[in-house]
Length: 342
Image 1 (cartoon, one colour):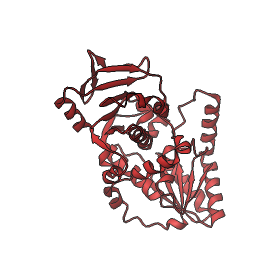
Image 2 (cartoon, rainbow, N blue to C red):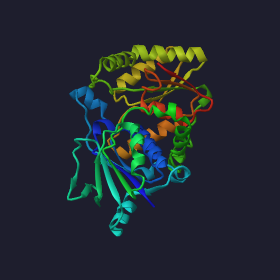
Image 3 (cartoon, one colour):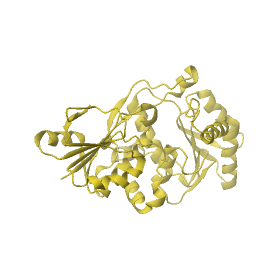
Image 4 (tube, rainbow, N blue to C red):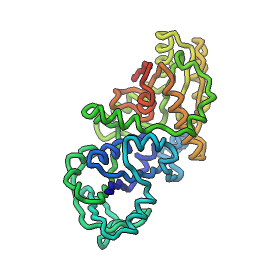
């Protein structure tokens, strides 16, 4: 059996979000399938941003990092229909037991590599390396290079720091659909939402994203304009107009709100405006619990409940640029759905 192991120096300002990590996992699966390797199933760093502290201190606040085993979230049996995988612990056990695994370490040029005396160092242990190659790969373009290394028993990809929505769904749609459908949350979460009572056919899901772009100025004019426009449309006077419009157009009087807004006054203002139009606001979670596990459970359950709503309102921008959290909701259950991206 041969393996591919993705390991990176995590940038917690970018990769602490659950759905960003899940989309990255999709690309890891695609690459592993492409070269017929067993994927070392990654652990992910996860911790919520605290928007309340962002408002107060004008800087990104992440209290700590929690390392989670993705097998505790997704349905492993479903994933096994699409991808061969192994846990990190089992992978390192194999590397200890077998001395002559032919291994290549692939990294971007000028990476800060934890590499010394032909040993690659990680937080899980060390791996003996036969060959090291610097290659200027980016995102999914690594597929153009990776087939060169198929004769190696073990491929390590260092610092695969892929971010943003996956655009390969356009050029590789069949594989995208297969891989996306193989990543489903496990039975624990289905049990958690089993008692939720909502008329999903007559409820507008609203994903009200708050705090995300307050600090980021972007590195291009187009991006700066996008952030500016997004923040404008996310103000209560604008988001409420958008909600009211969609409810009136579709004869809906019930809203299911998913938000990371931490200010109860903001939630109450929005509720008051909507009540004036006989629109009932149901808020699933409007505060960040300091317990990262409770936050994670709320996040996953919110995705699963929201995906059942026929009508959905997500953030400003195209499908390619929208929130990865919102996009994961849309893709979780594509049947009988009408979504708006404004």
